[in-house]
Length: 134
Length: 134
Image (cartoon, rainbow over all chains, first blue to last red; front, side):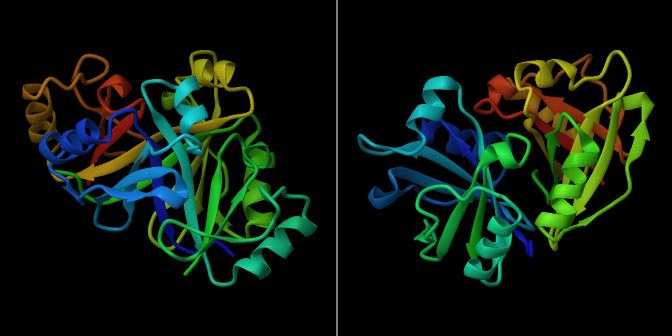
């Protein structure tokens, strides 16, 4: 079921500072900030050879990463996203195995314009897993 | 400086349970447990197409992940490891930029038999970054 690791997402308190640190100190290619008001985040992508690291800053009042940053004011790794071929098939197979899908269980359109779902971190050793259909 | 994302490491309270969940529920290829007494962990690798996820369970009295699991009893994402070509050159460039290298600053032999260093999470938005020379 699991395809490529699409990205690892890190919630950061200050996107500009974080992006510049990856660019200047780690010598990485970092994209320009992209505001995604529908998702409550502003994002940059740190492009590495085989995948990407996403840096996320809260945007707006109801950002899904606001609570995480309240608990982790310095920031931290927020989730990992794996690709799947068919998100409905993946969801159904997971639910049969007792995995809890967050929200109403219906895929949403993710930050990359593709259908995504999130799995309950309690079902995967405290790791929030996003599945993205590619 | 940053090469491939070599792996993402997740500390888990029960390696057997976690490995079986990735295998049976997520349909992933998971290697057999490997005890690394010098590193204080037992590890399995979840092989995905472009990288790997490492699941780590404490081994022995002075495991480097014991404190993390005390704080996060359900487990959680522990660190990300990026590859670098020359770890001494990378370290020196990072230190010039004020990045704190953990320990005495000298590379150790990592779990894959290659030289590794860890960077202070406070310098990277709460993310523990491992560098591995490949």
